[in-house]
Length: 568
Image 1 (cartoon, one colour):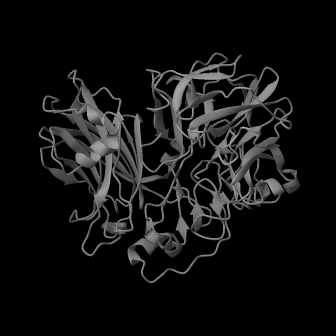
Image 2: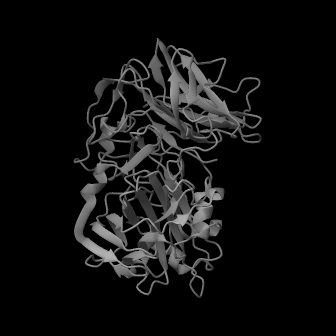
Image 3: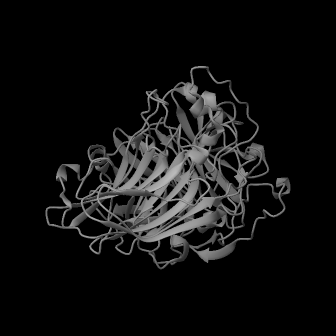
């Protein structure tokens, strides 16, 4: 069960500012605005801002089994500017006692810019009967008087994984109590993840994910005072998709709206789970724009990224090895993605994402390349940085012709990842593959490819595949095999490439590659564990394995500084 935190107003209001050691990190006041879901709500003025995250502090490292390869134990594989605890296991929640799943609590870190983080004392941990066996995912909401409230899922009976929704208020650990228990007819083992609440027509509303047989449901709960909650007769939406875990519901703005937050009273587009649609406020019903949207869903990310929330997304990424001893060896497991802004594409059919601007403050030395043509089968190294181990890269490509684009096989229409498996970075094509080799060794024995490949559909229109291929780590002797899960990740970029132009941004951070294609239309986060391309041994290349020229119109790469990261 993978459960995140979702925060309506990450203003740091659950933190104790007096505990913050660095006086330059301060919390700012909130501003009032009107939310499209109803009456005035509080939103945070950005930047800067503070955020609750599930993280913790005092931890005990575990001794590494001697069989674990030394490369994976290396501290150099810890990320430099992605959020993670000093050690131990994290997804959305945190285990303060080890680097594997268990002992689930809500821990607490605070930031003024989403990049520098200071760890505080745990915010919520098992303390009442209804969360005795774990404090799982939930959301934070600011009430009308500014009081923050956390709703979260607790486990009260571990034998059957019995799930109850609880509420907690700050400064009083005893204030946690249950507010929504599974009623007859509700599967108590599939009932979790309350969303941020919103206020309209005199009622607070929140959603809770559930499942009836194989149908996923978004249960609606209403309350006048945020204390007593009643389930609505009908769910907001349901579909034959299985359990709706970590669902979220929010209005989303078009490209002209600042921060991607729709603050008008008449916002028309909403996101529920991973679909875009319309919300009938009178009936509390949601209808996806695409009738097949529940089954061919939009994706926030096609890689390891999981469970973000709000109009700034915060997702987590697990480790890619499959043996628990690897986690115990390192003493840590799991990271969070770089926070992402989210807004609606002008077409109204997909969400766009981009790293928050705050990350750019950590850019250091830069190098630029422009107007360089990469011939078929050629590549070149991007030089001039101390290392390509911890960098931010933005590049604009221009292909000379689309005439040689390969015919697209419609059998892969809903399976970009399988197509990437078949048409990987080393499989020569017509237009592409072209892109970056990152975390690459000088001899290219190790490399991860982030690339595009252009096809033509049955109507002759270009279809762009974006892939991350980290499979080139099969070194003799095997550095991490067979215990390392090394999948390709892929998605189709709904981008107009008729002009031959397309862009790519990759945040490379030691053991993670987070990429944004076509201005944020397709996003892929991948975990990578080099054994040679570490530190100064990491290189960056541009390659072209297609049959047509590809011009690098402009490439800029920045060394990335290390922020404050929870004392690590």
